[in-house]
Image 1: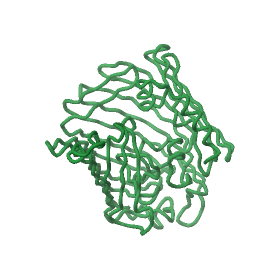
Image 2 (image 1 turned 135 degrees about the vertical axis):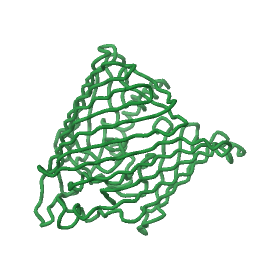
Image 3 (image 1 turned 90 degrees about the horizontal axis):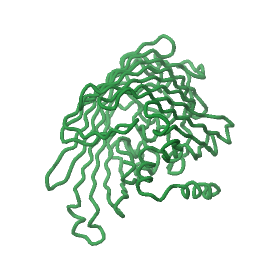
Image 4 (image 1 turned 180 degrees about the vertical axis):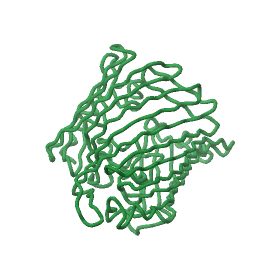
Length: 402
C-alpha cells in the first residue's frame, strides 16, 4: 500500500478547500462545477486481490446543462485482472414537488454483496480502509429501471424492474450440491416500495431529494418478486421501522429494525446476507464484527439501536466539552429453510457461510464530536464469538459520512 501513498495524496490534494464544496463532495461523491460534475471520488482509486490496483474516472452532467435530464457514467480498470468495468445512469425528472423521477441504469462491475449500500460499491473505502483483503467480491451485470413518485408529503412509493447476472470466482465459488461448478446465474425481479412518514423535513434539489429525521416512526414496506436460475420463482416481502426517539436530558435514541422473508428457492447470493463491515469506516446499519458472507437467512429480523447521550458526561471535562457519548447495540436473528440448504439448495453455501439460527449481538461505545466532526467507536461481539481478533472492531467516521 505504501507505493500507492503518493497517488492517494495527489487525489486528496485535488479536493477543494471550500467547506461547501467539501460537504457536497462527501454527500454526493461528486465535485460539482455546475455544467459538469466529476466523480464519484470513491471510484477513482482502489486495491483488492482480484483487480490489484484499480483506477477509475467518472463524470455526470450538471444542472446548467439540463434540469430535467442527468447522465452519469464511470469507468475503471484493474491492473491485475486486466478488465474494464463501468456503468451508465440516466435520470429523467418529471416533477420536483411532488417528486417524480425515472432512472435507467446499466452496470458491469465488482460488488461486495452482503454489506450496506454505503459500502457495496465503494472501491476507495473498501481498499484504503479495509481490515481484510478484498477477496469476496463478485462480478455483477445489472440492468435496472425504476420510477419514484411522491403521492403527497410524507408518502413516497417506487417501483423497479431489474435483470442481474451474478458470476462466481475462485474467492466466491458457486457449485451445485452435487459438486457441479456454476459460472453464473441470472435473476429477474420487480420490486415495489412504499415509505410513510409524518412531519418530515425535505430538501429538494434539482435531481436529488434529502429527508431529515422526524420525531415519529418512519415505516417502509418492500415487496419483491422474481425468478432465479431460469425457472425458480420467489417472493420477498420486508418491512422496516426507523424512529428517532427523544429521551429528554438523557439524549436521543435512534432505532432501525427490519424483518423479512423469502418464499421460494433462490441461489445463496440472493439470500439475506447479513450486512457486514470489514472496513475501518463507521456504518450505522452493518455489523462491524461480522465477516462478509459469514451468516445468511431467508427469514430474519435485524435491530440497530444507537443512543446519543448528548455530552452528559463530557460537558464537564475540558477539551471534551463538545463531544458526545455514544452507545450502540446491533442484533440479528434468522435462519434458512430446508429448501435453500443442503441437497435441495440451488447452490451450496460457501464453507465460511452459516445459517443465522442463533441470535447475533454486538455492542459498541463511542465518542462523537472529536475536533467537532470526527467519531470513533469500539465494537465487541457479544454472541457467537469466534475467539479471534475479529470479535473486536474499531471504526471511524466524519459527520458528513453518516
